[in-house]
Length: 99
Image (cartoon, rainbow, N blue to C red; front, side):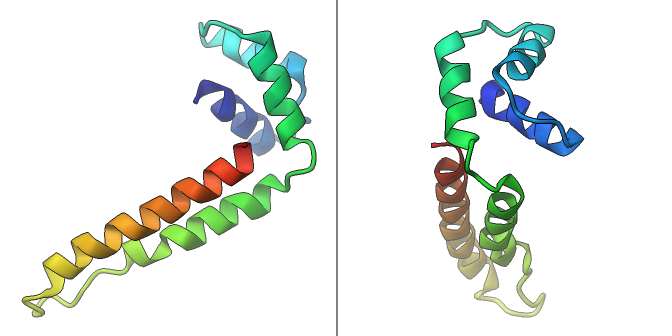
Protein backbone atom coordinates (compact mmCIF):
# COMPACT_ATOMS: atom_id res chain seq x y z
CA UNK A 1 0.00 0.00 0.00
CA UNK A 2 2.91 2.31 0.68
CA UNK A 3 3.79 2.23 -3.01
CA UNK A 4 0.34 3.52 -3.94
CA UNK A 5 0.51 6.17 -1.23
CA UNK A 6 3.84 7.41 -2.56
CA UNK A 7 2.28 7.79 -6.02
CA UNK A 8 -0.68 9.66 -4.53
CA UNK A 9 1.67 12.01 -2.66
CA UNK A 10 3.53 12.79 -5.87
CA UNK A 11 0.24 13.31 -7.71
CA UNK A 12 -1.03 15.66 -4.99
CA UNK A 13 2.17 17.69 -5.25
CA UNK A 14 1.82 17.90 -9.02
CA UNK A 15 5.08 16.03 -9.53
CA UNK A 16 5.74 13.39 -12.18
CA UNK A 17 5.50 9.88 -10.81
CA UNK A 18 8.91 8.40 -11.50
CA UNK A 19 10.80 5.44 -10.13
CA UNK A 20 13.38 7.70 -8.52
CA UNK A 21 10.77 9.83 -6.74
CA UNK A 22 8.71 6.87 -5.54
CA UNK A 23 11.88 5.23 -4.22
CA UNK A 24 12.91 8.42 -2.43
CA UNK A 25 9.55 8.70 -0.66
CA UNK A 26 9.60 5.05 0.38
CA UNK A 27 13.15 5.27 1.68
CA UNK A 28 12.36 8.49 3.57
CA UNK A 29 9.44 6.71 5.22
CA UNK A 30 11.67 3.81 6.22
CA UNK A 31 9.98 1.24 3.99
CA UNK A 32 11.78 -1.72 2.48
CA UNK A 33 12.10 -0.87 -1.21
CA UNK A 34 11.43 -3.39 -3.98
CA UNK A 35 12.67 -1.98 -7.29
CA UNK A 36 10.49 -4.35 -9.32
CA UNK A 37 7.33 -3.18 -7.54
CA UNK A 38 8.27 0.45 -8.10
CA UNK A 39 8.88 -0.19 -11.79
CA UNK A 40 5.53 -2.01 -12.11
CA UNK A 41 3.67 0.78 -10.31
CA UNK A 42 5.14 3.54 -12.47
CA UNK A 43 4.43 1.54 -15.64
CA UNK A 44 0.85 0.83 -14.54
CA UNK A 45 0.19 4.50 -13.84
CA UNK A 46 1.72 5.74 -17.07
CA UNK A 47 -1.58 6.12 -18.95
CA UNK A 48 -3.90 6.50 -15.95
CA UNK A 49 -5.67 9.77 -15.24
CA UNK A 50 -5.34 9.63 -11.45
CA UNK A 51 -7.62 12.59 -10.87
CA UNK A 52 -10.47 10.94 -12.79
CA UNK A 53 -9.90 7.62 -11.02
CA UNK A 54 -10.04 9.34 -7.63
CA UNK A 55 -13.26 11.11 -8.57
CA UNK A 56 -14.78 7.80 -9.66
CA UNK A 57 -13.82 6.25 -6.31
CA UNK A 58 -15.40 9.11 -4.39
CA UNK A 59 -18.56 8.92 -6.48
CA UNK A 60 -18.83 5.19 -5.82
CA UNK A 61 -18.58 5.83 -2.08
CA UNK A 62 -21.03 8.78 -2.08
CA UNK A 63 -24.16 6.75 -1.14
CA UNK A 64 -22.48 5.83 2.16
CA UNK A 65 -22.43 9.49 3.15
CA UNK A 66 -26.19 9.85 2.75
CA UNK A 67 -27.70 9.33 6.22
CA UNK A 68 -31.20 7.82 6.63
CA UNK A 69 -34.01 9.81 8.26
CA UNK A 70 -33.78 9.86 12.08
CA UNK A 71 -37.39 8.69 12.54
CA UNK A 72 -37.11 5.72 10.17
CA UNK A 73 -36.99 2.54 12.32
CA UNK A 74 -35.82 0.37 9.41
CA UNK A 75 -33.05 2.79 8.49
CA UNK A 76 -30.16 1.30 10.52
CA UNK A 77 -30.45 -2.11 8.87
CA UNK A 78 -30.70 -0.53 5.44
CA UNK A 79 -27.74 1.74 6.15
CA UNK A 80 -25.57 -1.25 7.07
CA UNK A 81 -26.48 -3.03 3.83
CA UNK A 82 -25.80 0.05 1.74
CA UNK A 83 -22.39 0.63 3.32
CA UNK A 84 -21.03 -2.74 2.18
CA UNK A 85 -21.80 -2.36 -1.52
CA UNK A 86 -20.22 1.09 -2.12
CA UNK A 87 -17.06 0.08 -0.26
CA UNK A 88 -16.67 -2.87 -2.60
CA UNK A 89 -17.19 -0.56 -5.57
CA UNK A 90 -14.60 1.84 -4.20
CA UNK A 91 -12.13 -1.01 -3.77
CA UNK A 92 -12.69 -2.07 -7.37
CA UNK A 93 -12.10 1.50 -8.52
CA UNK A 94 -8.78 1.71 -6.72
CA UNK A 95 -7.67 -1.70 -7.93
CA UNK A 96 -8.46 -0.65 -11.48
CA UNK A 97 -6.36 2.46 -10.92
CA UNK A 98 -3.32 0.69 -9.59
CA UNK A 99 -3.52 -2.64 -11.36
